[in-house]
Image 1 (cartoon, rainbow, N blue to C red):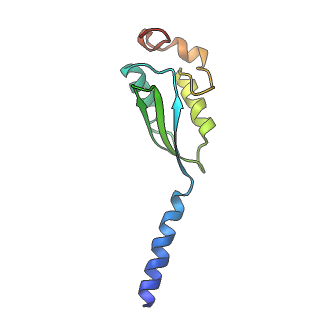
Image 2 (image 1 turned 30 degrees about the horizontal axis):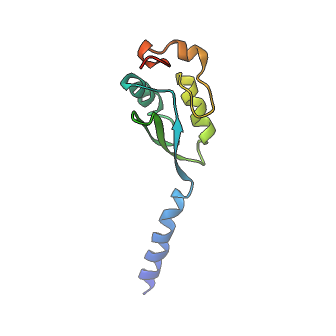
Image 3 (image 1 turned 120 degrees about the horizontal axis):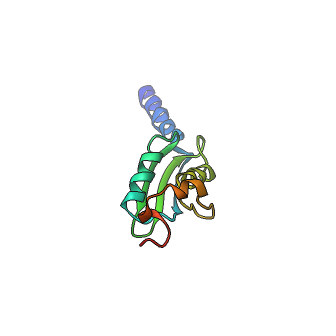
Length: 108
């Protein structure tokens, strides 16, 4: 019985590490496979970002992140620095200018 109690306490405590994991979608100005590749490459190694997936049908970036490590506003700022709008955060102009022609607004 003692072992069962210890296992139960351990099992209940395992979920505590995920309480700050958040999922959301960010509306972007990304429009094509080149955009997707650029975002994937740039966001792949960001600490606290569990995944980022650009849905090319909705142009939304689906993200899962650890809110203790990175905030949604910080993720939006990162997307902006890559050259894309992120919700109400406009693309960084210098980064936007470096995008491929197919990745710019109105190209598709």
